[in-house]
Image (tube, rainbow, N blue to C red; front, side, top):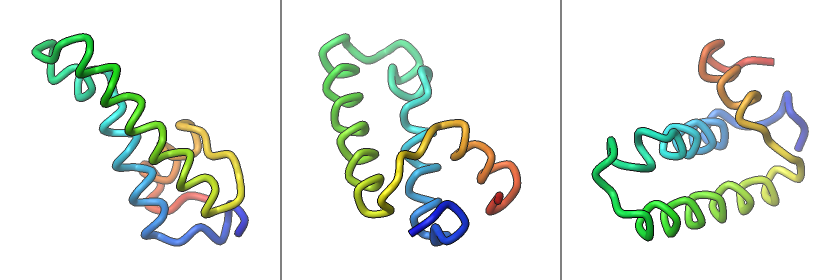
Length: 74
């Protein structure tokens, strides 16, 4: 599967992960403990890596935000 052939569903999953990985969400606006943030980060990154395996390519946050801002991007 190439960059252009990523499904909207897969893109939506990456976008959701990127949103969850943002500092304010990861830290629950500063309310989360350090151990919670570390555990959550590791979990989210494991999901990200799993999706990369599904699509067979490295996916960067830059690519993901481009999809989000262009409603599908190229």
